[in-house]
Length: 226
Image (cartoon, rainbow, N blue to C red; front, side, top):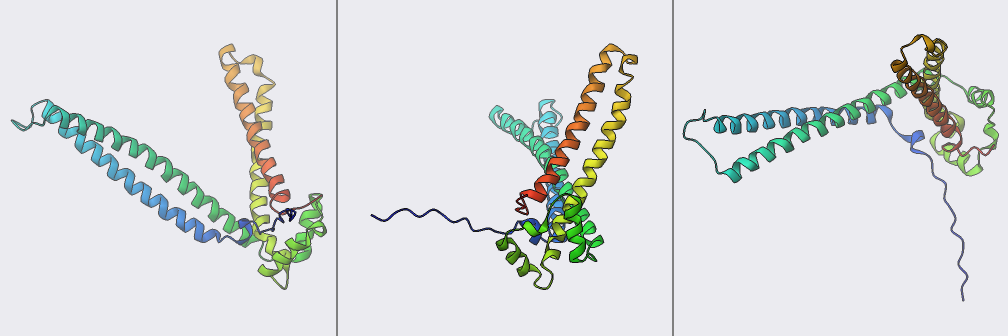
């Protein structure tokens, strides 16, 4: 009987190293435009249907009328169109934010394209990480991106890390500012203290979330075994 051989996991590069930020930004901008147009069309459709049904109900269209079932169908269609407006609006905002995020990454990456491999090493050393602990399989895949300077293939991920680290710092600064307010919370009306405390906790939660994302970028995405 043949023994079952354990599966060998084949490491693959994270898409954060190979994706084209500007291309993704443009794609999301196209999606955002599409959802914006769809939102407007849905809103116009809902308005026309609702106006028509209302006009017939009030007898403003003379003898023109529809069966009750048809009127019910029109009202349902109007409600669905309004729901479509809500859905399209959410997707419009989300894709626009994604487009802005990827353009920001592209700008950050452009600002560090002059880095040398030694600069990359220093970047990890400052954060108590050793680039020399990268797995050989990972290094060989980085060489496929940049044969002459494989460590420079990490720049897209470093750019993403820098932005996330910056956001974490901003949220933490806001939390510290709110902490100053918390020191005088006794001066607030009793019914407002709960809101002040919730704001402070939300700011700290955002800061911690961004910090965890920073750590995830370095450890999970780069397979650094420290």
